[in-house]
Image (cartoon, rainbow over all chains, first blue to last red; front, side, top):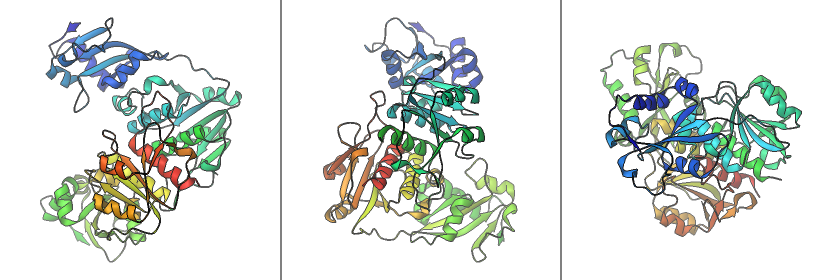
Length: 255
Length: 255
């Protein structure tokens, strides 16, 4: 275990840059996860996409028997830990995670969530959490989605991000699913099939558009079904994470 | 139309206090709604609980034909409007809304959402929006819920708050629903009835507990049903607003 006590140590600077700067995350293929829940997941679940590289602890964690023995570990005094932490009441533990995504693989059948220009970090994190809960097989990010390793996204997944693959995709990659016979479903405020009366096949992509602009034209063109969550007229639309989650659980639990 | 140009005018101070201070909102029974969507709703939908008292505009709105003629209206220069606005890219219009809730009425049948110590403003706003969308008849706030007229809650409802009643309730008021034959349903991560296989009567209360502590004991004691959204083992729980919304739409659309 290494101990660092100076705020000007290059490791501390690197940690803060990882938390604050997308560019640093992308260049290093690393990001930060805060709190025990997500770290516990990474320690006990072999992910093909993520590996825990370094643990950063405050003193209260030193003797915790749940910590692994053979992992690079850095100890920081409480005050320094608080400075690198992005949360108000920090748990005193965070990890540096390396992201090395397995190549995008199109299985013969499966359920995928396609996010089309989702910009809100809380919505993206919540959708990842629901996709894992509903048993979706992966998440495709199309267009200008918020970067999934933004600390606010990672926090909103509540430790579930390690259980799913996330792939930024081009329209060509979406076409690989189309060729494999996947049905692409979009959602619409009115006029589509009632979600609660619909049945689904074994190969489904659910596309969720941004709150501001909806589904973008290249995705719309490839859609063969349009789903509607029946809404009272007083409510034009639902929050994107809520609508996406209702549809995912609808798809997972009908039929 | 009154015009105010000084940041030290008492009206400006009152506006800023309404946005920032729960105490000022409670003492005046007023709160602020930002943006055209919510104001439009209040102008065209007679709510038994809310009335628009004052409109505050930036100059671009002066000649807008959609504005009413007989409403107290205050014009602010752009820079001053930006100072009183709580949003980053303000639309240049906000309203002061008076809250005078109709007394809590227990209808013979209906669907109510009971929020038990929900602390997150975004979750509360999103749940209000979903409750309106799913056609619920009212929202009961039990325990130490976040104040519903906090600007972040109001924004998250996306203009839907005026379409529903919100009542802080004691356990005695909840008992009025019990006496009237309502079924109180809670949610649970495992072991309850599968939401997607459940049928519901005409008189249902759905209780959603806080993310941190779940359902509190007095509510648990009154519950006759426990609903479970089937989750993959990798995901312990869903976001509270998502879980509540899935259950509301499940209740509204099964049977």
